[in-house]
Image (cartoon, rainbow, N blue to C red; front, side, top):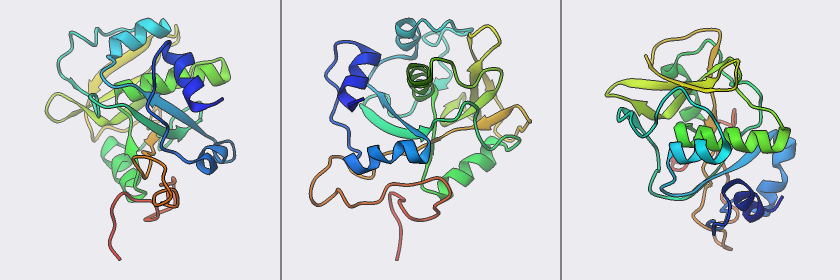
Length: 207
């Protein structure tokens, strides 16, 4: 599906920003087992839940302790199209370090909701059912981290948790932000980050 058509299918009559991933990068997503996800600027978590009819155990508008990433700007990202999160039995601290070593970011509430809706659109089922996912690019209160997932009834369940906690039912999901603001002759060859690829594709590096 064309990125603009996908965005309108998910969000309705909007004018999404142009996708900054190249045609070659998009064509490779099937091979790498990844999904392209779009998050419009300023859309709230509550609006996303209502649009996609996600029932939730929390009122995102009322919970002022949740902090979001890149809330004021449109952004596209790529993430693994896996049914369950990875890095199970690894704490949020360890998972964030592992992702940062590869030049990757983490989810926040809005990214995760957009991912869940995209995953359901693609596979006709919900991800992260009865598993928790650390939201490594958001935060909860001053030093906490959000964990989120769908419970057995398909309800979005969110809680603030401890960053050094680990369990066999809690994992993390990475986010690849595009290595360019727009696709131009000068930027199209910039390498994107990949899980497990090490330093290649980092947003900044040193020779």
